[in-house]
Image 1 (cartoon, one colour):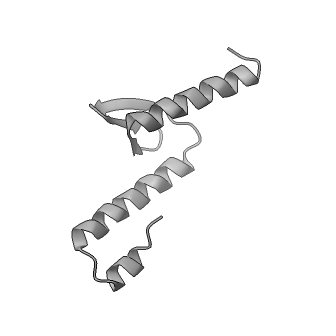
Image 2 (spheres, one colour; image 1 turned 30 degrees about the horizontal axis):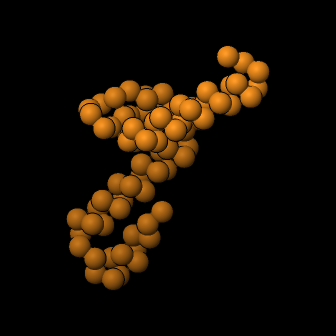
Length: 77
């Protein structure tokens, strides 16, 4: 997580601070979600139907692979 107050104190560009705030908010959504269900919103971007976090294809593929492998290890298909 980005320390927004430190960024402000160091006089960073307001646009950079805004981007970091958006990243922090997205991370909070992602980390609090119990189960992601991603839909493609546009090329290269997916949005979870449950929490609203936005992720790239690398995250989504890894997440789905993790679910698949976890299910296989638990004995379910």
